[in-house]
Structures are given as C-alpha cells and as structure tokens.
Length: 463
Image (cartoon, rainbow, N blue to C red; front, side):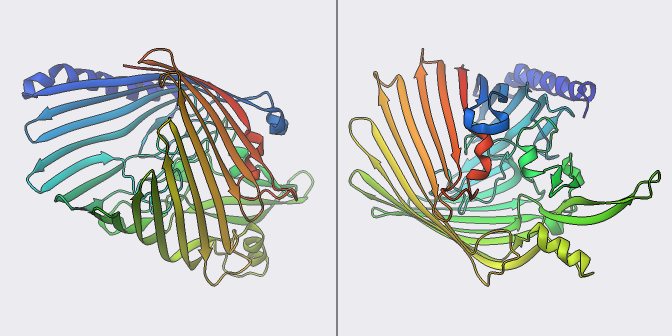
C-alpha cells in the first residue's frame, strides 16, 4: 500500500471513530471512557552487533487509543494504534491493519468487541486478544492469538499479541469458568517482510552459500487458508479455582501462525552469455495444527509455583533447506514439513518479597518424537529463564533484569530495563538487550540475534 492509499484509508477510519465517539451519547450509553498513550522509542545497535553497531534498529512513535462504552449489561471496547516508523520496519498480515509499502506507517486495530453478561452467561463478539497459560513471556499453551514477530529490539511479549476475530461464549460460576471460541477467519503473525526491517535479512536472507534467493515481500506471497467455514478455528478453555490451586484445561484446532518455508531451486540462463545461474525461490504455506494442554498455579506463602504443558499431535515441523534442495535434485516430492508429535512443558515459580523484590524462574522443555536430522530443529530443546524486579524511590523507579539460557548450545538473551516515573502520566525508560552465541560459536536459540544487541531510549505519556 502506498502513502496515498494508506492515508485515504486511515483518515476516514479515524474520522469515523471520532464521529462515533461524539455521537455515542445518542445511543444512551451510561458511561463512556477514553484512554490512550503516546510512546516514542529509539534503539541503537551495540558494539557487538557487528555490521549493525551504531545503526538505528528501532525508531517508532506510537499513538494508542482506547474507548469503552457501557450500556446496561453490555460494553463496547475499541483499541487501535497509529504508528510512524522511521526505520521502515512495519509490515501487514492482511488482517490486523494496514502498513505503508515502505514500512514507515501502520494503522492497526488491536481489539474491537462487544461484551454482554447476564447471570452465569457471557458473550464476547469481535476482535479480541486471547491469553492462555501461566508461563512468563514464553509460549506454551498460548496459541490462539498470533504475534507481531517483526522486531526483537525492546520487544514486549504481551504488547506483541494481535487480536483475532472471534465469538467467545462463557459459562461463569464462583469456582469455574468455561470459554468456548469460534474463530471464522485465520489471522497469521506479522513477519519482518518490509525491505527496511533490520530483522528481514536474518529471517529471509538474499543469499545462501553464494546462491541468490528470492523471498516474499508481502503477506499474500504466502499461501493462506481460503476464507471459508471449513478453515475456521476452534478453541476451548475450562478453568477451576480452588483454595489449593488454580487449574486450567485447553483445547485448540486451527492453523500455525507462521508459514512453513519451501525452497525451490531453479536455473536462469542469461541471454547475453548463455550462462545458467542457480537461484532459489522461497515460498511458504500455512498448515493445520491441534493442541491440548493444561496448567496449574499453586500458591505457597510468598511463592506461586506454576506448571504448564501442551501436546501437539502430529504437528507440522519445518524441514531444512539442504534437505529440500536435495529432494529437488533427486526429483522427489519436495516437502517443507513433516508431521511429528510434540510436547512442550514448563515448571517455574514466582517469589514476591515484602520489600519490593519479585523473582521469577522457569525451566522449559520442548521435545519432538520420531526425530530425523532433516527436521530444522533439535529433537530436544530446553532452556531456563530468570527475571528479577525491584521497585525503589516510593515506587517511582522500577529496575528489572531478565535472561534466558539455551541449555543446548548455551546461547543467551538478556535484558536490563530502568523505568522512571516523572509523573503519574510520564514514564522514561532505558532498555538494554544483549544476545550472545554459545561458547563454541554456535548460534543456538539466541546467538542468531547477536546483531540486534542494542540500547533503547523510550518515553511514554499516558492519558
């Protein structure tokens, strides 16, 4: 979408929202509340970011606005964002909003739904963000809402979540809650497809072993599920609250949020020299998945112990580029994935101390059964995370440190953040992200992002 088409879409949308807000009292709303924030953030590559040291890896100004209107037993909620991106890293997934072709502007509708509650029944219809599980910033059972995966610099797990268009019917009691979801339209994750996105070169390189690669630049270059009732998604959650523990059971049948990449070699003959040159065309396809899971939170004094597990029966697992190219030259059917059972589990605890300290630790394991070397992952992957938070100066200063250790290759990701409240409405933040390879030079889970080690300056005004 070019700038002209972007603004011809954005301006009417903003005007419509403004008119709706002004005219809302004629709908006999009992209460209307508006809230929002303006955030500006700039991230700069650290010296260990190699070619990107000193580069601006993040440069965004974000206006976030929300409106709530209450009508007897119903409530209407709308949340959207207008983003200016100086780096040009914005992309679209075709569902969550619009992005300019050069990645400099985006307009996103995060949530827009109607809530209704009467007695033990509740209904939510519209775009909504769904959060499942007890894990801290790790995806185990939290598979319903996709993510914005177009950045890693100063990225926040919850803020990266995208809304889905769904109907949620809930049964509510004092000791239990059951939520059933019908999701008619598939919403994929946002990928770093924009040419200006620093992360694009990591996920979609232009060359591999000296061979030129042609990768997608737009979301519809991938094969998306056809929009019909047969491609809908379904989800259910049952939560139980007891004096001993909070328990939840989950079930999901839908689509993987990211495409499975297919590498197709071909030869191009230059007319001038009659020389043929090998090239690789990259495409992708979204595929079905299912998940059943459970979690528990068990309080014990100052501690809360958390357990969570998810089983994915016959889930598609990405195959390696080398395997696909070898299949091509042996004139076999090239497959971008193989189906395998997968089990992901977590055990952890939160420790809250009286003097403002909070400590969270987690261990996560991820195993694929009937493993073969052509799968683009290890058979058993596991990691540990630790986060520590402390409030100071009458809770005006918050210092938080978090880290993740890849226990296969010992690559690490760490973040140190200082948040200072100038006033109740203004917060200034300094965020440092550091990604390191393992001791033997292997990328592992986090070493592949070493060029995105950065320091970010952030300011936020809430109103």
